[in-house]
Length: 115
Length: 113
Image (tube, rainbow over all chains, first blue to last red; front, side, top):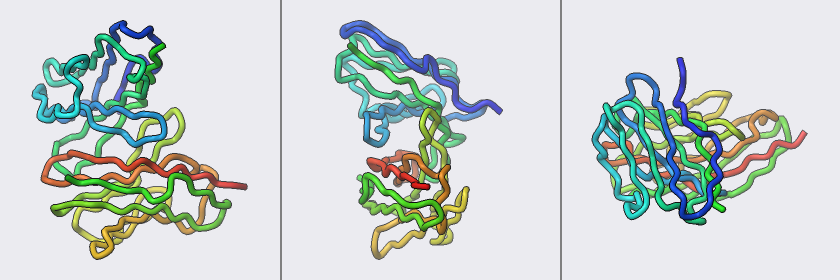
């Protein structure tokens, strides 16, 4: 069974340019997460979906970040415009439920470098 | 809100010696606690989790952790380190009924031959 798939794996863009990341969760997983991981730190939640509904986006910087999960399956995270400080690894994860004791499965991440 | 503190940013052990990675948590409710491992260029993988059943939890690859409510700790141990254990380890807490996972800053484990 395929795990969580993210693309691209690496992305280098100039500041002020837009960028988008794509995530395909494990089949049947209703809950999808986007995390931001800065170098030397633990992942921080950006947004959590239950099916197509964003149930927690309190940490998403909405002035430049947006996300969508059409049809409750794949998801896209966009940054526009990108800033130098956005350089980080963006992780997508999914779980079968949104309950607190449920294992989350993570993709390999997209490493973004803004120059 | 829940949080975790991983007490060591870097731990170095020799192959065949015990491993101890320390984690303290803060939670207002009955928490779920996890340990995830991150190998270079691989996704985070669950090692083990505590969900209010047995306080001593056994995970994959010989790792285990003990939930101690009185000490608000969830330390990860392994009796004998292997070279393949070298990775970044994250302690995670979740509470409140939904899977709002809060990660610690991570502990990098180095295993010397």
